[in-house]
Structure formats: structure tokens, C-alpha cells
Length: 420
Image 1 (tube, rainbow, N blue to C red):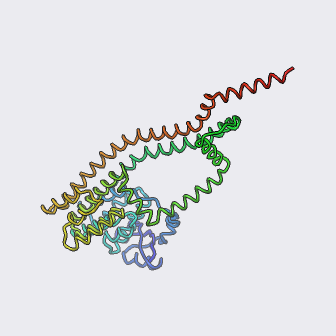
Image 2: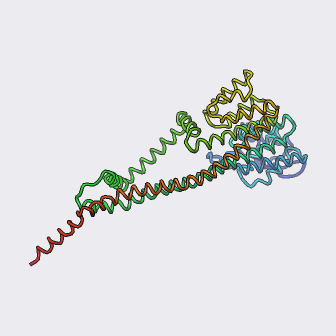
Image 3: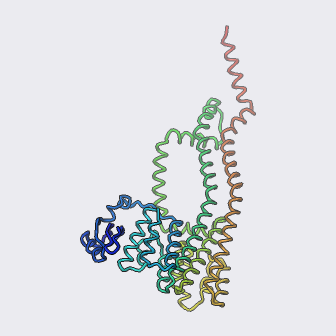
């Protein structure tokens, strides 16, 4: 089956319609449109409709665009509009070109007889498994508008947490780039000039100074070799980051790092609780909700704990008992879940857990920013001080020992003795 982008005239309303349809050939696509009472004006493969898509380059859909779309669709469905009409109304308000094309495809699938969740599932890069599962649950229970509203809230919370963490990382990243820039500038521009003075003195230099002079010479004289080495290193690192060994190691570091591990663990707890609350609140069975949440965690160590918990729940244990042995779930989580299980309000208790850890993340991110600033400044000052000590230390030691003065005076006496 091929995706075709078509422009057609609706014979019932005499309006121009642009959307997508799946068919074996352009002729089959045109025949399918006529069966839907659409007169085809233009039908062409999707790969020819957008050159960016043809080369696999697509502008991403932001969380903000997805949240706005979900809220608007929920409002229109709640107002009583038919699904197809609601989708088209929201589509007309989308300014993001690639997202508009995706919704066109969704509309075409829905009008072709697919359910909304099935239509969303055809675009996994935009609508993930959690999104599709919640929409499917809403369709089954007849509460699609409420489910979409809950889904929009969940996406908004996830995006807010990710944005706060990124904001907290901006300052350390800028300072790190500044440190590297200062060191390279000193090694490339300052050290070569000072090294000439060292050579004229003919004195033995300390090891740190020798290393800096060698590094300066290597960076300036063999810059082309450095460029090649960086390219090779970048390619190798890129390949290594996609290996299972690296991913398991990085996921472990995310949970056990001295400062950031505690923060990220709370982020995972908030994501776990909010996702489970949304799924269970929409009527999805426990095991299916756990399996979907497992993939949403995106951490191999937590996913392995969830796998063991799923086996335990399938064997008859409660969720709180199943996740309690985990080394990576914070103990408060199973304790709060246990209270929800006893009272029969597990989804509400999950919601409380999510709000609690989201508040904890907000507080820790604020504290992290104020803590990192002085630490990074000390690190920056320490590195610059070490470089300056390696560059200027020998000069001060030679001045103190009188070597520079003796060399200068020796030069003067030689000049005077050569006169008449």
C-alpha cells in the first residue's frame, strides 16, 4: 500500500478537500475517492508531495503543538461535533505544516473506516503508545473527550518537567564550553609566545609546562590531524551510543549519579505514577497499563523491575507488593499505592504521587541551579589557575633565582667589552 496525497471536491458539499489515502496505485486511489463521493482533482504519492519527506527529513512536532491539538479536539468532541468534522476543524487551526499533513492522514484514515486510535497509531513518532492506548480506552468507554483532556494534562506535565531540567542544564553547559574555550585559547595563543622565552633561557622546565608546550605545538602544527581525529572519534562515539552496553550503562548512571541520580529518579517516579493514573483512570486493565507504562519509563533498569512486577501481578500479587523489592523505585511509591489499593482509589493515589514528585522535582531543579553556579565557577577558576601556574610558574621561579637578571647582565658586559 502507498500513501497518496489528494485534492478532491466533495460532491455533497462542493468543498475542496485535501488529505491522504492508502491504495495500491493512483487509479485505485481515485476509485476509492469516488466511492467516498469525492471527485479527485490531483492524486500523487506522498513522497512526491514533500521533498523533505522524500529524503527522510521531517520537522518534528513539539509537545506544545500536540497538547494544543489534543485540548481542542477534546473541546469540539465534548460540544457534540462528529469526529471527522472535529478533526478537520482542529486541522484548519494548525500552523505547523508537517503536523497538518499528519492530521490530514488521520482524517483520511478515520473517514476510510479506521478508529481514531488506529489512525493515530500510523504515526508513532508523533502519537506514542501511551497516547494511542488512552485514545483506544476512551473510544471503548465512550468518554473520548474526557480521555483526551486527561491526556493533554499528562503531556503538559511531562513537557514541563523536561523543560525545567533542560533549563537547569543550560548554565552548566555554557560554563563547560567557556572552560574549554579559555583553555584552548591559552594553549594556542599564549603558550607558543611564552615557549620562545623558555627556549632562550635554556633552563629545565617542570613537567606540567612541558606538557602544555607539547600540546600547544600539536594543536597548532597538526591541526588537520586533530580535525580528522575528532571526526573519527565522533563517528565511533555515535556508533557506540547505539549499542546495548552503552545504553545500559547510561541508564544506570541516570539512577545512581551523585547529584543528578536523585533528581532523575524522582522524574521517573512522577512519570510512572502519572502514566499509571491516566491509564487506570481511563479503564485500562492493570497488566496492560503496567506494560504500557514500562515502555514509557525509557530506562532499562526500571523496565526490568517492571517486567518482574508484571510477572508478580499476573501471579496474584498486588502492585504495591510487586514493585516493593525494586532497588530503583523510591519506597514511598509502593507505600502510597498500597493505601490506594486498600481504599479502592489507586488511580487517585497515583495522581497524588505524581503531583508530590513533580513538586519535589521543581524544588530540586531550583536548588540545583543555585548549587551548580558557584561550583562551576570554582571549577572554571581552578582550571584557569592551573594553566596559568604551568605557564607563568617557571618565569617566576627563574626571576626568583636571578637567572633572567644574570642573562641580561651577561649580555650587557659582552656588548661593552667589544668596544674600542
